[in-house]
Structure formats: structure tokens, C-alpha cells
Length: 371
Image (cartoon, rainbow, N blue to C red; front, side, top):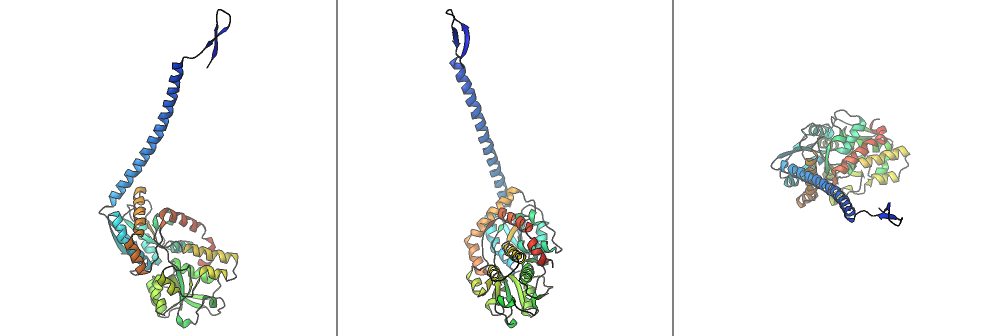
């Protein structure tokens, strides 16, 4: 800064100029201050990253040599059991742990999920979750669900397979479109909980297909036995458990919730229409269409893996990472193809978001599942 000083001998004001050293010193102090702030920010970021890395390393070390219980909420040979056993070996490999599959059947998978949700949140008890079915049961206000889906520690989705609406060859019906004009109520075997029950009620209700339900079945295995015994001539469940009946001529596929991708499932589906195809060819109200679309969305929330609420963040991160690697492992892929179970990774954080959204939008199906 230049300022007016005292006057000289000639009467003109002198110019006062700050000493160069002072100006340089001031600039140096300013630069030092800025440098200190930048260094502090970098230091804080590095410290946070180091802390996170250390926590994850400690969490990874925690699982080494441990035994993890992976609950399959159905009987051996069911869909949830198959996904659990397909993933267990590789999941154990990437965690450095032993993963044991435990079958806990009952309540249309709810009993097993209840057991998982009530376990210690230490990361050593996880489960395959019938997410879409559990959301449907929640909307149906079915008793027995002792867990909050929005608070589970979601690990990720292993895959999703289409559900299929089948009929007996003795029914005389070979196409879904025939049911749209049928007058006599069809008899449908049904597990009163879960995805299949939701599809039965929404699809048959929204398409105005007259029907009666034969209930009392507690598992898909029991449902198959009832269907083969002639207790009912129709059923709606995940496709893989019905594969042998479809390929063996004991059942005919009329409708699938989505187009199958695995060759064996494509062959078993035959000429069955998809849910979206059936919707596009029918004349339905906006409420009916909304219910069908919501049911279709719920079908994509399938074969998710989760732990109880409150698993420490670092341990959950390790579980999610191992889960993703396990799905990509060649041995997992080979076994899934052998069992005709489709694989398709979805992250745990994405599943959590999908669950929140599905629950908030479930009102469109409530008319049918609560009717």
C-alpha cells in the first residue's frame, strides 16, 4: 500500500512504501496458512481412509476360521435350499470360513427368516430371504412375521427365476387365454404365504378368473404332492421346483412371470405367455393393471441374502464383497447351471432400496391379497 507521509523540504508530500521484507513475510504467512489447511484436509482424508481400511481388515480377519450358519428357509431340494447350497462353498472360500446350510422350514419361509433376524448380529448367521413373498405377506397382514424387512442387513441378491402358473394335463386347458372366459371356478393348490400365494391372488383376481383355493400346504414340496395327487389342477410357484413335472408331462405351463433364460427352463415353459404379454392382450382397469405390474416387480425381489439388523458396517462390507466374488466363481456358475437356477448379482445396498420402494408401493395389490 502507498500512503501520503510527512512533507519534505520542498513542501511536497513524501511517499511511504512498506518494506519489501514485510510484504514477502506476509505473503509467506498467507501461503503457509493455506498450505496448512490443505495439508490438514489431506491428512484427515488419509486418516479416515486408513481407519476404514483397518476396520475392514479387522472384519476380514474376524471371519477367518469361523463357522457361519446359512439358513435355507425351506426343505432340502427347494429353491432357497438350492441357492444356499450353490453359494455356500465359494462364500466360505472367500471368507476363509466354513459355511453350513441349515434348513428351517415353515410358514412359507417365514420361520427361517424369523430365526435369522433374531440371531446375534455378529455376521455368523445369515439367510436366503424370500423377499418378494415376505413383502406380499406383510401387505396381506399375515401373522408370524417377526422381523422388519427394512432393517435387515442386506448382503445381495443371488439371482431370480420366473414363477410359473401350471395346470394338470387333465384340466383340458392348454393356454392362459382360455381362463379369461372360463365360467366354472378352477381349483388351485396354494401355500398361504409367500410369492406363489401373492401371484395366485393378484393374477387370478386382476384377470377376473373364477377360482377356489385348496390351502393347508406348508411348503412347495407338499404343494407338489397335493398337485400330483389331484387336490387341485392349478398351482403358481417358482419354476425350478416344477421342472421335473413340466418336462415329464405331469404339468403344463400356462404363464410365466418373466421370460426364462436357462435352456432347461425355456424348454419347460413351452408356449406359456409372460405376465406382461398377458397384460398387453387383456382389457383391464388401471387398478388391475397396476396390481399386475406391482406383482411383476415383486417377482424380481427373489433369493436375496441377508443377516439380522445391526451387523457392524465393516463386517457387512466383507460379507458383501465375498458374496459378489462367490457369485462370479466358476464352481458356483457350474453348479447353478446344473441345478437350473439362474444367477444374477444385485448389490446389498440396491436390494435395501428396492425393498423400501416395494413396501411403499404395495397398496396396488392389497385389494387382491387382502380380499
